[in-house]
Length: 371
Image (cartoon, rainbow, N blue to C red; front, side, top):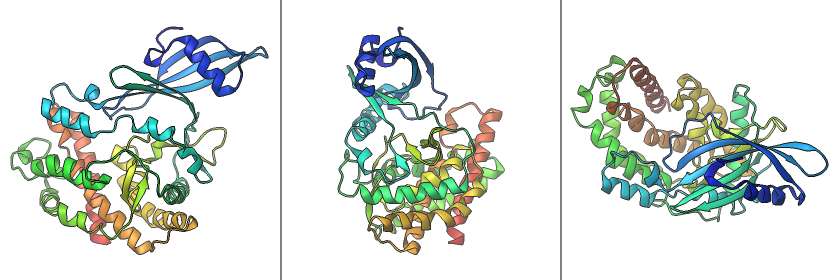
C-alpha cells in the first residue's frame, strides 16, 4: 500500500474513490501498481502507471482500474546535456499542465457521439510544478486498427473541432501549432541541420535510402516559409493535436466508441490538422506501413469534412485535402529525417530506424507529386 504515483497516500486515494463512485463507505483493501507499457517521449510526462484497487463498500469486493499520469514542467524531463538557455526557453514555452487543465475544463460536454474523454477521478498538485492526473482505465481492445476505425475517428474529430470553436486553451508560440512548429522545430533545428553538408557526411545520412532524399528534402527545407503560407486560407480550428490511433482507445466495454487521451498538444491549428496524426501516426511511429497512408487520406478527408458539416462548419473537400497535404509537408519530412539519431551509436537498430524513417519521408514527398 506504499509507493503510489505522485506520492499519494492510500487514505487520499480512498477519499478520491469515494467521491468518484459516490460510495461513502468504500474502503481500500489492496493496491497494485505497474508501469503502463507505453513509450514516453514528451518531457512533460514523468510516468504512466496502471493502478488496480481492490475495494469494498460493504456489499462485496470489487476491482477498480485506474491510470495515473504524472505531469511535470518540461525542465524536469529534458536531456541533462541540453544547453541551459535552450532548456529555459523550452521550459517557458511548453504548456506542461495543459492536458490536466483541458480535461477538467468541461471539454467532456463538447464530445460528439462516439467520442469521449477519459473519466477523471482526481487531480493532485505537487511541489516543483508537478501534477498527477488520475483517470479511469479505458481497458482498451488490443485488436488491430482498421480503415473503418480511421474513417469513424475522422468524422468524430471533425465534429469535435467544430464543437470546440470559441473555447480557449493555453497560448501556443506563434499563435497556432504549425506556426510554432515552423519557427521552433524547423527554423531553429531541422532546417539548419539539413542544409549543413556535415549532416550528410554522417554514416546514417550516407545510407543509400537516406542519401537519395537529399536534393528533395533540402529543397523542401528551403521552401518552409512558402509552404506554410499556403495554409493561410484555411480557418484555424481547435485541434486535439495528437489523435494518433494509439491515442484513440477502443474500450472493451463499448468498442463502438473512442476514448480520446493525451491532450497535451491541444490548441489552434489549420482545419484538418488532426488528420495528420490520425493518418500518418502509425507509419511515423513504425507500427504501420507507410504505404497505408494514401488510401486512408482518400477516405478520411471527406469523413472529416462531413463531421464539420454536421456541426454547421462547411469547408470544401478539395480545399481541406490540399490543406492536409500542405500541413503534412510542413510537419513531417524535415523533422522525420534521422537527425535525432545522430547522437546515438551507429548500431544495427539505428540503421534500421533510419531506413524506416527514409521510407516514411519518401511516402510523404510522393504525396506532393500526386496531389
